[in-house]
Image 1 (cartoon, rainbow, N blue to C red):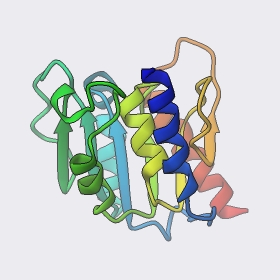
Image 2 (cartoon, helix red, strand yellow):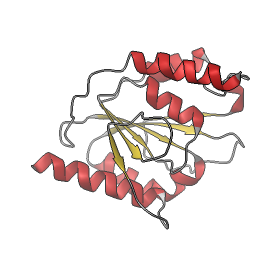
Image 3 (tube, rainbow, N blue to C red):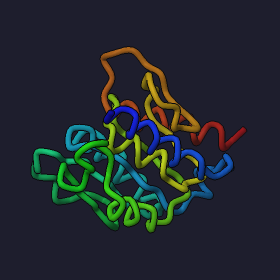
Image 4 (cartoon, rainbow, N blue to C red):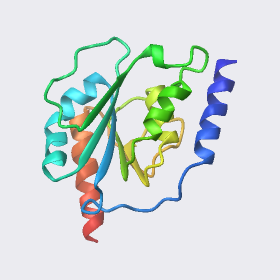
Length: 172
């Protein structure tokens, strides 16, 4: 029963998906980054580079174990959430948190997770960002641009590759 409810929520989220409108690296001003504590720790140096390049970063971290997050994150806003913000049957964020997420304007969404994290995948499906990028995972198709890679591979490698190809496409 829970899978049916979750699948229906994903279906509804994707129905309102905006048209793909490529956003170049130089053009992007507001970036939403989705992460878990592990992926966030690895990718912090490149997040600092995005901030240095003048990108406004809003960070959404799924932290079910309430692990301490690094204090020097280069984000204008950090939203950490856990199991209490999830629906008990569906496992996706409740409406109140989803509305908070949707209220954050973004040109681009970067998902730094290497495995499917259901709450973050759902937020990606709900996002109104014009360009969504992340690691290719089997299952739900929620990204406009994905990276496929064999292990060993971490979130720093993922972010490095996403930024490299995003900038390269921008120059073409």
